[in-house]
Image (cartoon, rainbow, N blue to C red):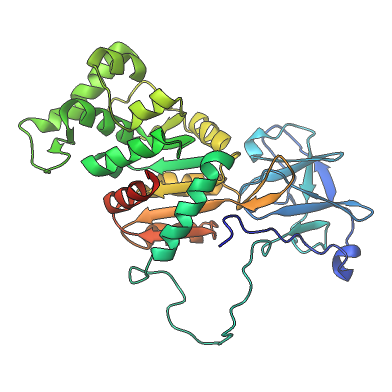
Length: 363
């Protein structure tokens, strides 16, 4: 298969698009307030008509944002960032009627030869075989290690198992991670595993409960806070392995977004929700492949920031791949219902997924 499918742009010579009016803008009435008829963006490629048959593609997009058009520059921004007087694109139609075109079929595969109107097994479930999904993912990751940006969104379950933790550490070390997004728990339990070999007090290999093990993550939090930072704690405690250690060692940025239920938290955890959103959004602007493992809330949050396409430096347009790994269909369905239609679900436990991935990619 071709690793990165070709993009088919819209045919703007079509009569309806050739006759489309130029897109309109209205000035934002106040900071953080947009015109009442603002155009809300999707995660699909979106074009605005500048007039005279000139259509401009938004280079960076996301769901639930607005477009600010200045001359030949089209910027997609969150409404809270809009300043008074900004020229915001207005219009609620999406097929060119108001100079706005949302393109949903740029990466559509060719129709199969069967062409039946009725078929079984048209939706992924726990009965779906994932051999092809794995094979495609291997190819995508090998390509994007050198030509893209791979972002991982991790739940703490990745650190609760010795083998999955070692696999993630290995993938980071081999260059298969350009950014890591998580919460306080992933980093805390990864550091707990580095010092005590436990996750929430359970041995990360045997799952045996350790005496007073329920204190372990709290002790780690205390030790890191005492030293003021994760790097300082790693040095002071002699930590030489793990997911966060691999990020520090390779210079991979990680964003730890806070939660109302956090213990501690670790000093690097971003407590302000909008600061955390901004930090995650910076990686959404460059991501070409995203893998979210066993973390529903973080996966949905990042999915909302993520476009389905990326305009590369040479002007080519490619898809942004989005994989969700979980035990059930719920997370993938939730993401699809929230607009992340490109999500590919691999329904398994994260330990099996990580070990499978690492056993193939480490060669």
